Amino acid sequence: MSQAPRAITIVGASLAGLNAAEALRREGFDGPVALIGAESHLPYDRPPLSKQVLAGDWEPERAALTDSEELEEDGIEARLGVRATALDLAAHELTLHTGETVAFDGLVIATGARCRTMPGTEGLDGVHVLRSLDDCLALRADLEAMPQRVVVVGAGFIGAEVAATARGRGLDVTLVEALPTPLSRVLGDEMGQVCGEVHRDHGVDLRTGVGVDRISGDGRVQQVTLSDGSTVDADVVVVGIGVIPNTEWLDGSGLEMGDGVLCDASCLAAEGVTAAGDVASWPNELFDETMRVEHWDNAAQQGSHAAGGGTVHSGALVLERPVRPQDPAGRPRPRRRRGPGGDGIGRGAAFRGNLRSSRTHHRGARVQPAPSRDALPGTDRAAGQFRRGPRR
Ligand SMILES: Cc1cc2nc3c(=O)[nH]c(=O)nc-3n(C[C@H](O)[C@H](O)[C@H](O)COP(=O)(O)OP(=O)(O)OC[C@H]3O[C@@H](n4cnc5c(N)ncnc54)[C@H](O)[C@@H]3O)c2cc1C
Image (cartoon, rainbow, N blue to C red; front, side):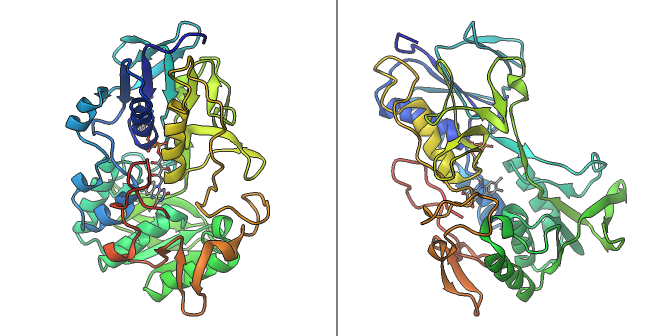
């Protein structure tokens, strides 16, 4: 693109998208900026959804990342409840679910990811995933009804946090993890074991090395059948088995797809088109690997970078410097380069605390079930030029 973009459209009105819009204004872009989001809510922060909001300590409003007045002041047009369904790269045009088309000069793709689900659970009451505020409020309502038995499938970050929060509400929780050690892929075996012990110490029934074959019930969930043939009674089930990047709307657009939207080290996916946040797959020089990173810092920084980067006013939605490398587990830069599937990266550098006492801190966040507001990294903390938000 040889001329400065006159209008920039951002698809995905969440952390990366909002940071993109604000970076444009911060850097002096004075053309129209439209933020198109499928959810009906103004941009909000997701980390409190498995913690303070789910625990009932915060009302949802407290997770808001912005408000209408702020957006209006910044001249950012938020189009909410609107889904982009197609991209015509050559014409620089988007199609929305309403059938309307939107022309753009510069496009930032920030459509994030959605939860994987367990087949056969569609329409079964009491089975939840947790990605959006609506998911969180539906799950919170079910937890407030004081179910007898909560089963969480998957002890990754989200599953572990949900188990801790549900346990903190005094509920009986079974946490089922297919790996022998929870979180071992991101934290390593030793730290994973510590996390598992902390859950057990707090009364979570942690079952490891076993998968889930079936979630069943008559209208409402009643039972989870594990791969070893055993069954666990359940009134509420939360499925936390990972996410899928939201790229289907880009099928046939000509953009290159891998695990997400493939872009270069500066977030550029095609001329005038960048991608940022959970949906972006880019060469992360920290690992010499092309990857997606599902992490708050990554989404905030890439959003700013993908839209701004200091080059928008000088002629193109093209970035001159690569985005900062990121660790999928949010750990500090390791001393040695290791792949993300390794047995732990710079573990000594990532944690401080006492393994024996199970009181550990991950970048300032205490690892424990049933986190209280005080024990969690504060969402009120300003994160430099980025929107406020906690780190794991
Ligand atoms: C419950 C929970 C807790 C978390 N806790 C932490 C934590 O403690 N620490 C941490 O670092 N990270 C945490 N994360 C991860 C972090 O929140 C994400 O990395 C971050 O939200 C990614 O931001 P994003 O803007 O890239 O994508 P998303 O936040 O997924 O937003 C994408 C948006 O795009 C919209 N969209 C999708 N398709 C379309 C379309 N076709 N048209 C229009 N809009 C579309 C979606 O509806 C969504 O609103 C957590 C995530 C969750 C779900």
